[in-house]
Length: 252
Image 1: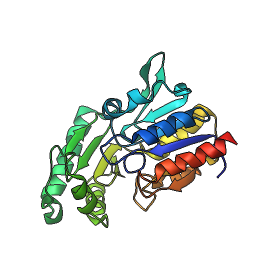
Image 2: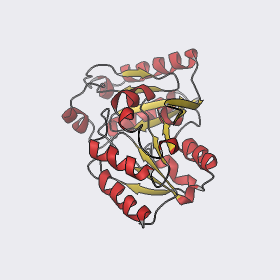
Image 3: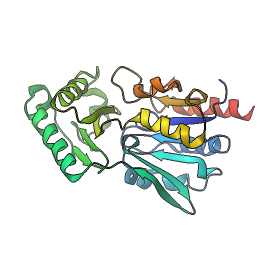
Image 4: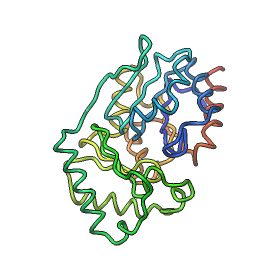
């Protein structure tokens, strides 16, 4: 592996199990890597969740000023400057748009025997203002439920296609293993990669994106047309090895 000029990571099912914090080993690896190259996290998760779960563990890292967070499917961007997290941009949905999205989701689920039969654990609809996230199994679903409810991905693909059929005015994305994320049209990880490329002055071809969902319809697949280098992982257990490979390459 050659050292890229910047590395971008997906969060859920890449750096961490869905809706959980990255393991301490992973966070330590990220902190070391920040000493060599800029790092970004692009995720459907909201900024408050990341701040609550793990950001305090990385704020003291050398090079923290070149750590970029792109929550809610890159509809927002945050950096750590002058002792606090500062928002560089936000592409918010209006109240009316979010209300319409929720109504569309509820209608699609209620109208499908396949989807309405799925048991939910806890909250299903998460309103991030810049994005509406929906998980059929709920944010509190046990890990074995999250891992087995839709092994072949057919239920989420069906939900995604039905939502796309119901509306053409929003972006419908698959996030992690359980979630469908909806943002403004054109707001996805392609947008995040191109924005960061301009911000850093680094061509996408000289950056690396690490994710788990490069399959057709996966929320990582949209970065491929940017020309960015990609590395697929099977899950969070594999990612520390990728970080170690990057550290070895970037120290050379």
